Length: 412
Image (cartoon, rainbow, N blue to C red; front, side, top):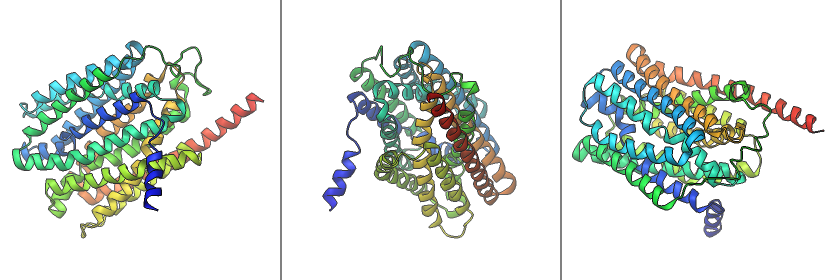
């Protein structure tokens, strides 16, 4: 019985190209090293002594840099190719992380974190386009899921390891590890993967099958981005307000916070690929699944209103993780499916920018609400915002269904 279940799990990982596996490996190396992110708000608040408002502004510069980087990465991927963008992004951001530990002033950090994020987040749309180039269209969502699995496995290893590094050698160790992993990951990619000049999937002669070819006229896509934005705002609370809440409300150590994030990564590792394979087999609408994900995240925020029992943090994490497993892989594949061929970079840039904007709004809004009204008000606000995201998801579902019917009538 166990052997059968294990075999079924392993079957979910078949059919990927060599390049997709290498992309997965470098994503894992990169993410396992991204230990600075979960502890950035704690580092700024507790180590450097900034106020909630100042931490919020530094996180805003993080998000603005991320938005600009995502836009540049997408634009350059369409112009000069994803391969060059990926190598430049990881190599340069790795070197920049070494210098970040030397900057401790508020103004200096705003500029430094902005610049690092511009360079680092050029990688994301380029990586999404590379997935489209190296994977077959029918494997696209599973390829995205495989890479997300590597991200989560990296996040599972990273925070717990990061917590231990802080407790033994302080925060400076994190910056060294982060820089080295960026550089190691891209060297592995450079040596093992050759640039793909032409991909049958990225053939500009035959544009995509969607009704509109201009991203700015694609109404379902823009409304869908609102739901993505809201899921991002809720999810990023895990890396901004929630680690501070762990310490202040329940007196958890960095290591315990790291373990909770590790729990999230482990759940994703074992459950996401089978879930995605099942949903794809059943041909359930990507928009419907993302909407359910938004609902699960919304419930996780409302659960945080229980502030007298630490066990609620585990239950909340289960809801948040299921929300993440539903929302993120399918939002990626829906966004990619809307893009006419040859315009993937542009679409994925705007898509990743929605999460960068979520980072800005998540950090600043959360920190301001906490400073003025306390943690409880923040959890209530975030949960209510999630319900708006669910409503928007149903609006998009209706539009996409209408669009599909129109397309079928036109074919007749």
